Length: 252
Image 1 (cartoon, helix red, strand yellow):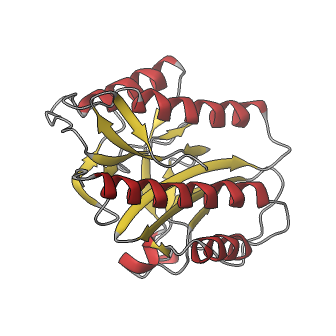
Image 2 (tube, rainbow, N blue to C red):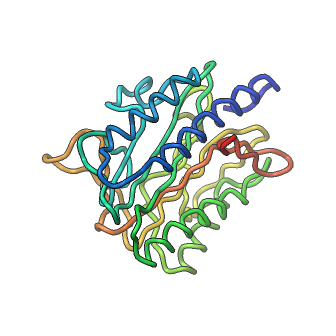
């Protein structure tokens, strides 16, 4: 989506705040012993209270209001009977629609007690995301996002999952521009037009380079790190403006 009016921007900011507040509340609610379904039910209740509709359910028939992925699962985890334990790494992805506009956000949460390496990974996952966001602005190259995040990852001795990309959003959950890499791609030549709305969501890891499905034993949704390694994802929905990035998925 490219923002075409103040009303459209206001509606984007509203749904952005809703998903951000939902994510923050779910993150605070995580505790050992609760199931991922219980955590998802909290997210559903908060979205419904705000008048929003779960985007993965609406668009893809996903079996949950939010995606909750634990440890070896890194994306699209189905909420269910899995119990969260101390030391787990839990990723929550919240996307929703209200008034015909979509927004998407996500974060990873380490359940105490955790190791220094995992604490550092979570801290640096956020830093990697913001490193990419700082490259955003009208008439700037989309490829600058992946180059900056890639340099950050190399400098700090991390890997990046290279088959889960950022994407355009707004009128639908996934739209043009598609496959916005959060790793360096030399052939990327696209430019951000003013008002362009898209996500920035790097997957920073202690060794993984790919996301893979569970094979015949897996479900139709959950993606796993390959090779298996602790991996975090942080995500914001952002508008490219003449003054730089406008992040719309900050809590209210």
